[in-house]
Image 1 (tube, rainbow, N blue to C red):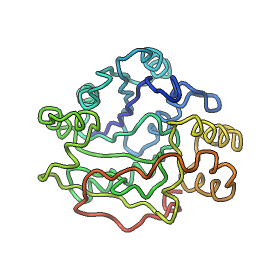
Image 2: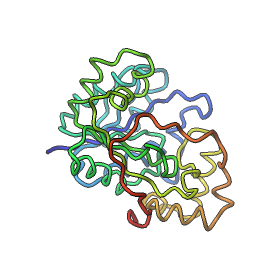
Image 3: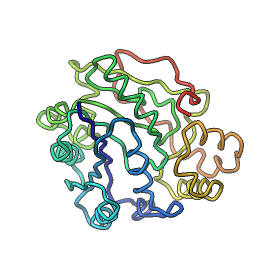
Length: 259
């Protein structure tokens, strides 16, 4: 069994131009995400699936110079970009992560993949619904499934959401790792708005290079201990909608399990 982690990224952003090249400590936000994905147990390769739009060459160069495999694909057809990356990776299973999640937790990603294996499901995720802090989302599925989706997904929404077709298809057996909730789902550890960059910078100012290795539990503890930091990007946007319904969901996971 082979496993690839594919990190999707693009330069286009109306709110923070070239946000993934913003520095978090000594490395860019994109490399912080890729570096964390490299720590996922069993991952044989980490691929940066980068769009081919204006400005994306800089992202591709950033990942290539750091030693990561890079694939390129359509900016607007994210499903096609993902399918190309999956073909190039040549792995049997895939974990999918978004490049604007610089605090992705490798151990939580591993838990999602293990859930896929243990239940023999078609698809596993940790956002049905999202009860983890925003920025820890990941998905796991067999590589063959993304090719089936690429062949059959017709509507624009399914082409842009990557796994929308899988999440909604009645044949698919979907399972979910349930987050802790209790208000932690309101925390934002993603990089989409200028205030998110302020939050990320504050975390690195607090911990220095140790921030690159913080677990979700440690970052949650910081947010609870330092509400001045968590307030920097609090209240940005509504709760993310849950796409699809799982046939099985785990009991809520305490973040200390992933510490």
